[in-house]
Length: 105
Image (cartoon, rainbow, N blue to C red; front, top):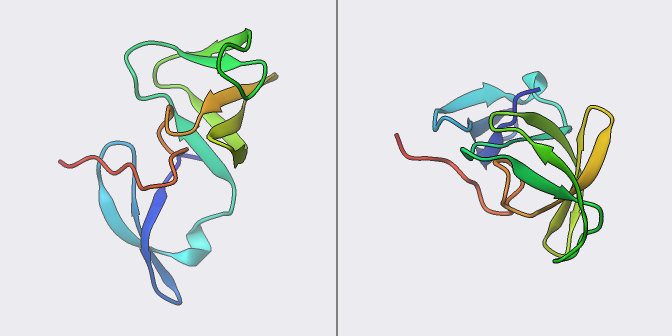
């Protein structure tokens, strides 16, 4: 379930990057439509109770933690990690930004 971001695509292949900056072509059949994100920050990421600035803190996502991404709208993404659900600003976790977040190596 490690997240990949698609940066180019053909009929059968996808050029993807991962959170470490690796870029490769892979066949579409080895990917799923499920979205996941990683907290690549050195500090825990806050998951909020509501998709708005100043909403109460629901949980902290540890550095290096993997979480499933639900819908993203109005600059916020619904995040699920285990039994905990919350909201994160779009782009705060690797894999949630609209633009590809590939890191240069």
